[in-house]
Image 1 (cartoon, helix red, strand yellow):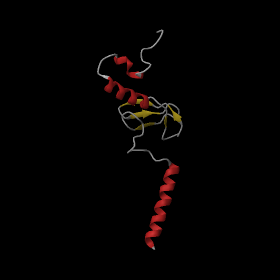
Image 2: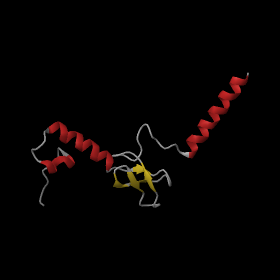
Image 3: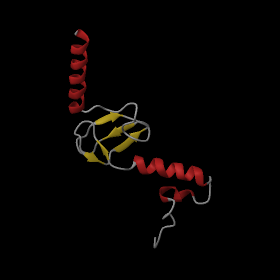
Image 4: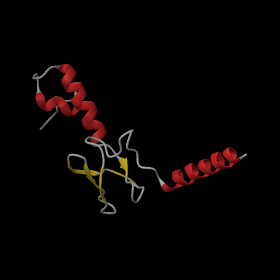
Length: 102
């Protein structure tokens, strides 16, 4: 393959002139996010997670398999809280409980 016809449209170039530009742009944004590097919730390393099925992700480094979003491992609503973030939340809870007792 001497050169690619997908310089502008990216991964959606495989569709050629079909389906319209709007849909191909949406496909491109989704696929670029999906195939990018993400943080594993188990080992916290920044790697390219493998998508096994719809919403099932696998970390090649630690072997952890987990459920996530359809196109990205962590969605905005179902974001996995890291242990260090959880400590901060628990500290805030303690402050609120102490303030409520006064």
